Image (cartoon, rainbow, N blue to C red; front, top):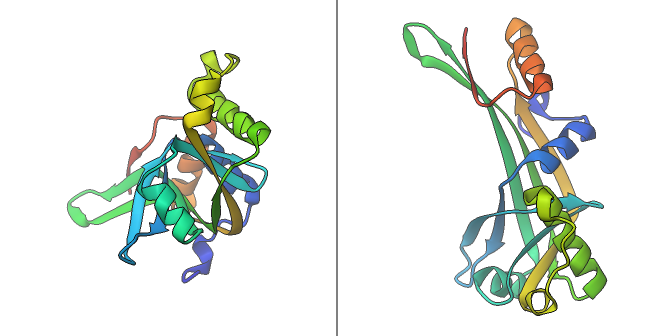
Length: 180
């Protein structure tokens, strides 16, 4: 990491961000060799990231051709601005980047468990409902086995950092707008 002081060293913060983020971005190698990034819903479980989708399409084609992927989540925390100085605005954030290998989940039990975890995260009131077998059969579940994971943050310093940490603990609506 270029700026070591911004590295998140507490794995608990990284796990909390993965569990609370609602959108992740999957990076694959497209058929022409260019990077392809797609936003998607996901769940983190057991040192892996799971997502679901159609059983055919660009994501699946890319993963079958080259299973190496990158996955990113971020949390905008605050804009810290200095009155009278538009160039003095800082963007405070946390982010996680994962590198790993993706594969379609073939095991039916693992597939249903992953779908259940996705339901619990995104549709908790319906998480106990049984999935129709025909829907499970046509839904692809992909598991990213994590090879490396890094977190980065800039949450300010001094009094601003204290304010940000209190806001995060209180579950304040983000991003905040703070004055320097």
